[in-house]
Amino acid sequence: MVFREEFELLLRARYPLIYIPTCEEERVEAAIAEIAKKQGNRGIYVWDFVDGYQGNPNDAGFGRRNPLQALELVEKIAASAPAIFILRDFHRFLEDVAISRKLKNLARLLKSQPKNIVILSPRIAIPEELSEVLTVLEFHLPAAPEIKAEVERLLAATGKSLEGKILDEIVRSCQGLSMERIRRVLARAIATHGELLPEDVELVLEEKRQTIRQTQILEFYPATENISDIGGLDNLKDWLLRRGGAFSERARQYGLPHPRGLLLVGIQGTGKSLMAKAIAHHWHLPLLRLDVGRLFAGLVGESESRTRQMIQLAEALSPCVLWIDEIDKAFSGLDGKGDAGTSNRVFGTFITWLAEKISPVFVVATANNIQTLPAEMLRKGRFDEIFFVGLPTQEERKAIFAVHLSRLRPHNLQNYDLDRLAYETPDFSGAEIEQSLIEAMHIGFSQNRDFTIDDILEAASQIVPLARTAQEQIQFLQEWAAAGKARLASKHSSLSNRIQSQFR
Image (cartoon, rainbow, N blue to C red; front, side, top):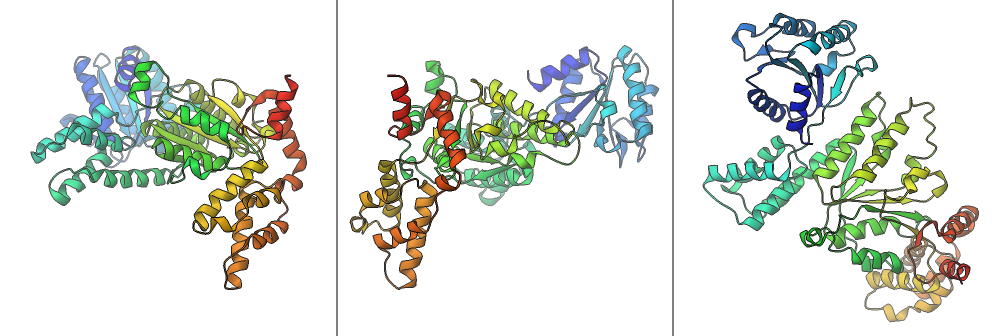
């Protein structure tokens, strides 16, 4: 249900106190004014701390620097007069006992009157004693049709026009920004060269990166890796390549739903994070990295607010890839002790969104320790598939060496015996293979010569692979995957052979 429909419903149902978390005061006030006019010209009274009430000459300045007096105006207006009272930044005063008590008294009174109090705030900050009387209503960032109308309005002012394809590209690049930011960045583009040009998309994207940085929750991550840059993992690659066109309009017409996401479980250093970047690059989608730790804030209620903000921003930027690295560390041990149940509420909001989202946000979550993940996370419907990414086989290690050496020494690749390198590095992960090459380069560089296969083998002999230091954890993961709890990312592995033998 869109904001206008839901707000109208709350007015008709006489919800007395409505809390709208948004930074777009101008846009939400314009929407409320339209709704008020549609419902028989309801009176609108707008208050802020500096200027008091504005717009109505009889009440101009009333309640200036006095939030309690601002609430008293609600009772002064005739009981039968339909009215909406918009209070800007009023969340700052909700902790005051007098304000809190007055709002609860008004909540009782307004059940029988056609009046509503609307609190506008850039974030949700509701004291526990007011949680039962305040109704939170989300005001989403502008959608594509609204952005397109604004871009066309600006184009009309310049007397210029854009081709449909370029116009759609600019509109798509603007998704995820507030209307104020969209107007500002497009006005900057027009001021620069008198019109909107296709290259202004990059200007909009930089504004978007700035917005995402300011949230301190999501990070706009550059994705330059190709799927071909990753050695092995053939099952996973095939699965992804089959879904390459699943975000297109042709797929919608075919009846395909948007892909939901992947959970990649496995040993550290086996390419799970690299795969997340490669997916975004291969599908030509923006990559957003979520630091789940940043969702948890010190103030009560702020963590849940940040979670909703993250979801809203990711959906506004869709289609996109949302990368959640090491999700097992964020949601391990959800007992709610010590944080007033905040972690449980954040987790509940997150997995509900995973199950119910219809927006084209492809979630790629990685986890090293499956034991700490809540069972609800692994239930079907949260992700399209769960893949186990194990240690590379000898053939895959050969492919990984080939990928790195093709990048480091493309003209001398024949000087390195890939079969021997793969054979001499049992139990090495992709990250450990890369580290052995870096160490070999240090050896060669320090002696003013190119590094050789002997340098690589010497470097590898000094590395103790994780497969030996964390043997119990890796064994548990392999047994978990062998029990059929996840699909195998690799086609040819000792683990896949074990699984096949169980079903012969």
